[in-house]
Image (cartoon, rainbow, N blue to C red; front, side, top):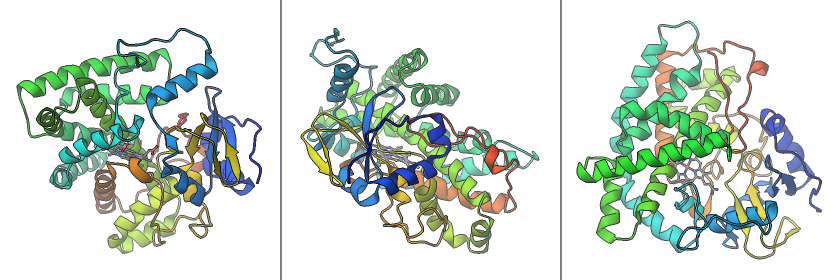
Length: 406
Ligand code: HEM
């Protein structure tokens, strides 16, 4: 089938009505050429089989240097480019992370972080996650109405990730502000300033951890990098930046979108109350049904490829639409229905292939603990507004609510 070549703006209205808009695209064809909010053309893959194949296709690259070059070629051909001494483009200071890299660099960095980010370290966090959950939910009990995002979904993941990395309590609010700016106002002055402040703080934090090693992931990362002498300072800062940003807003919105799904599907909520053993399955269905990422991060074609019958030239940007693929009824029967007992295996909310989410076990644990806590504390939780009055954030990547009054 021919691709959609008319530009369709990927804007706030699209985010508000994501699954319906994606359903139209998915049924019209597996591959579409849209423009993103900056006017950049992107090939968007909307069906499950094609999206999954794309995520694991080695002919697609993620290297940030090539991405900068392609963007510059498009918007400012012939313009002078900011280059660092080593000939690389000078970025914000933390783009040297594995989500921006192809093998062999990706393989090297991922191996190192896997050594520090062990299953054991994550399991050790469970009691703290339970404690923080209890604390936040107990505080909610004194109010008739709260914004669930402010009261719970935001503070939980940021406290967990700060705890994991060993970030000072007093800087948590700064982290929330920085990551918000970075994800919502991409390329604006505010986001550049946020990036600068964050880079400075991370540099100081690394120096502190070097001087006073702790029992935290950051110290462990410093140790593996020094042992093997294979992680530069810039790579280390970029890695911490990636863990913070990737691990924060995603989990917030998994919890936010997931709770909204329960509250708007009372029969599913009742089922879960009746059988709390369904919590783990419910979290998987929340990921599939309304996961926090609309689509994968940028990939570009390193050579001409054909996806779903559409020829895409080399040097073009491609997104796998995770939200569209996970609602594809060819793979998940009655894909638009929220059903906590369905078989969710193979959903793409955490991606697929070599960049499969490193934090998936942590995110799952947080959401499961949160949901168990919620069932115990507030089995009668209700929305305090009409569902149609809820608005979505205007972010081109994160799919989340602005607020969730309950
Ligand atoms: C990568 C989703 C939570 C760390 C990814 C990717 C997705 C994803 C889709 C792949 C992106 C692509 O291929 O373009 C999610 C979701 C989360 C979540 C839905 C929560 C519900 C976390 C947490 C952490 C984390 C808690 C860490 C603490 C990472 C890292 C990568 C990644 C480091 C890059 C892996 C690589 O390039 O090899 N995540 N994530 N994520 N995620 Fe997550």
